[in-house]
Length: 200
Image (cartoon, rainbow, N blue to C red; front, side):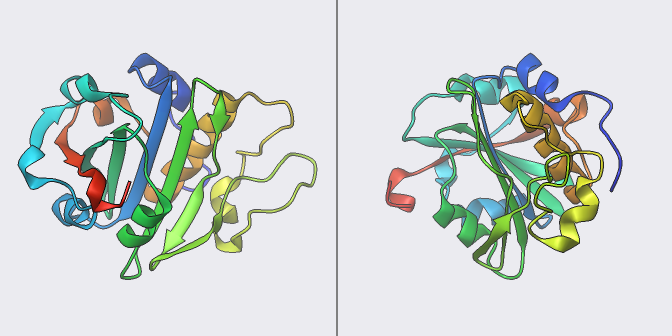
């Protein structure tokens, strides 16, 4: 996947499918969404198998009440989309225990703020792995991930949505799949995450 680009702009897809005001996602290594859900301490009684449109009826319901949509992403990877609230560092660390790699991304459309693309592994934050800036900026902070950043260089003055597209391309190259229309048309599982599960 290194060097490849998606057929559709990743930001355009988020906007088309109603995620323009916020995107919070985690890609976690592993093919067992049920295990990922258990690690996330979801409420099993809240389980609803549903498509994206039904999942989105809980979008941005609350800043405090976590609602997630979990399912397969690509071979070897599971994705968690936060429909309401957002992931915490504690959750990312717990989900990466056991040697698993994990990527996090957070975009606040209301404030046009984009966080770094962070890499966790084995229960710890490794570093941010954003692509470098054009013109000799600092290299990718984790050298073995530099190959995934080729052709995705950031530029000063870029909008947050342009940068979001590039970070999603980087995540897609690492995990083996970009966001696409089939991704949005899949059936996954929606859960509530109790506030007390992570001490919110």
